Amino acid sequence: MSDAETYDLVVIGTGSAATSVATRCRAAGWRVAIAESREFGGTCALRGCEPKKTLWTVAEAVNRARRLAGKGLAGGGDVVIDWPALMAFKRSFTDPVPQHRAESYADAGIEAISGTAHFIGRNSIEVAGRRLQARHILIATGARPSMPPIEGAELLATSDDFLSLPQLPQRLVMLGGGYISFECAHIAARAGAQVTILHRDEQPLRHFDQDLVRRLVEHSRQAGIAIELNCRAAAVERTANGFAVKSEDGRRFEADFVLHGLGRKPNLEALDLDAGGVAVEKGRLRVDRHLRSISNPVVFAAGDAAAQGPQLTPVATHDADIVARNLLEGCHHEPDYTGVTSVVFAIPPLASVGLTEEAARRDGTSFELRQGDMADYQSVRRTGETAAGFKILLEPGSGCVLGAHLLGPQAQEVINLFALAVRLRLTAQQLNALLSAYPSGASNISSMLG
Ligand SMILES: Cc1cc2nc3c(=O)[nH]c(=O)nc-3n(C[C@H](O)[C@H](O)[C@H](O)COP(=O)(O)OP(=O)(O)OC[C@H]3O[C@@H](n4cnc5c(N)ncnc54)[C@H](O)[C@@H]3O)c2cc1C
Ligand SMILES: NC(=O)c1ccc[n+]([C@@H]2O[C@H](COP(=O)([O-])OP(=O)(O)OC[C@H]3O[C@@H](n4cnc5c(N)ncnc54)[C@H](O)[C@@H]3O)[C@@H](O)[C@H]2O)c1
Image (cartoon, rainbow, N blue to C red):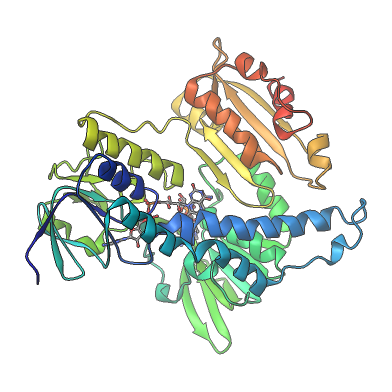
C-alpha cells in the first residue's frame, strides 16, 4: 500500500451525477480524482438511455414502416430488424465512450483511476491499491437491480444483458411492469420475439397517468406483447431448454431469457460506508437538503445513489449541478425536482411531467382537466399510429399548468414544452401564445388546451 495522496475532491463513479462535478471543481483549480469500477462513462451512456434509444429508434422505424405499408410505402410490411447489425450500430455509439472519457479527464488534469473504491476513514478512500485523502468526497455510484424475494433470482438477466444480446432469444419473459420491461418488450417484439410481461398488481408504470397506461397496455397487446397483470413472480428455475417462471398464483411461463425489471436501488454495498461514518437507512444514504451526508460533512451524494429524486438522467445532472455549486460557492443550494420529465420509450412513447390526476385526487389538490384521444389528429394518422391521447391538469383560477401526460408518436418531444410550463409556472394562456411550427407535434398544444 502506497502513502496517502491528497485531493480536494474524490468522486466515486463516472456517470451523469459525477463528471460535471469533477470537471467544474478541477476548472476552479482543485486537485481532483475520479474512480470507476467498470468502464468510464456510467449507465446512461453505456448501459441505459443512450443504447436503449438507439435500439428504440430502429424498432420504431420498423413499426412505422409496417404501419405505413399500403399507405404509399411499398414493401413496408417486409421490413425486419437485423439484430446483430443493430447491436453493431449500438456499439458504434457506446464503444468510443470510455476512451473518450479517459482522454477528457486527462486533458482536464483529473486523476482517473480504474477500480472499486471504498472508504477507509471519514475522509479517506482506497481504490486500486491507492489511499486517497480528500477534503470532499462525492458518492455518485448509481443504482443496481434490487435483489427481489424470488427463488432463483440469480438466474435473472439484467437490462445490461438485454442491451448487449448478440442474438435475440425467441421467448422473453420480463418481470415487473416498469420502465425496463416495457421498453425492452417493445424493442424485442418489433424484432420478432415472443414477449410476456408479468406485473404484480393492476397498475403497471404506476407513476404515469393510468388512463394512458391502460391505452398503452391494450396497444402493446395488439402489438403481440402478452401482459399479465396481478401476476407476482415468485420463482425462476432452469429447464431442459431454458427457464420457467412461476407466479405466486401458480402459473408457469417458459422462456429463453428472463429479464429483471423489478426496480433498482442505490449501489452502496462495496463502499464500506461504516468506515467512512456515512449514515444509511434502509439501503439509502441519509443526506440533508444540500445533498450532504448528515453524519459526515466531507461526503456529498448525487444521482441514483443519492435517491432524492426519481432515478433519471436529468435528476442526476441536476444533482451534480447542485453539488458542484455547494462545493464551490458555499453549501446553501438545494435540488428542485419540480417538472422532472419522464418518458417510457414504448412504441408509441408515454410521457409525463408534474402532477398526475391520481396524485391530485389523493392529496385533495383542485384541478381543471383537459383530456382527449388524439388518434384522429392528422399528425398521428400520418404516422399510421393508432394509440394517442393526452391529459393536462390546470390550476383553477390561475390556469397554471400543473401536469401533462401524453401518449403518441411525438410525445417524447412535445412533453418538453409542458415541462417548461410546469417548471416556470406558465399558464395555459401563455403556452397558447406559442407560434409553433405547423404542422408539428407542438402545434397540437392549442387543440389540447382547448
Ligand atoms: C436500461 C436503462 C435505461 C434507462 N433509460 C433512461 C432514459 O431513457 N432516460 C432517463 O432519464 N433515465 C434513464 N435511465 C436511468 C439513468 O440511466 C440513470 O438515472 C442515470 O444514469 C444515473 O446516473 P448516475 O451518475 O447517478 O449513476 P450511473 O450512471 O449508474 O454511474 C454510477 C457509476 O459508478 C460506478 N461505481 C459504482 N460503485 C462504485 C465503486 N464502489 N467504486 C467505483 N465506481 C463505482 C458504476 O460502475 C457506474 O459507472 C435508464 C436506466 C437503465 C438501467
Ligand atoms: N425511460 C426511462 O427514463 C427509464 C428507463 C429504464 C429505467 N429507468 C429507471 O430505472 C429504474 C428501474 O427500472 P425498472 O423498470 O427496473 O423499475 P420500475 O420501478 O420502473 O418498475 C418495477 C416494477 O416491478 C413491479 N414488481 C416488483 N416485484 C414484482 C414481482 N415479484 N412480480 C411482478 N412485478 C413486480 C413493481 O410493482 C414495479 O412497478 C426506474 O425506476 C427508472 O427510474 C428509466
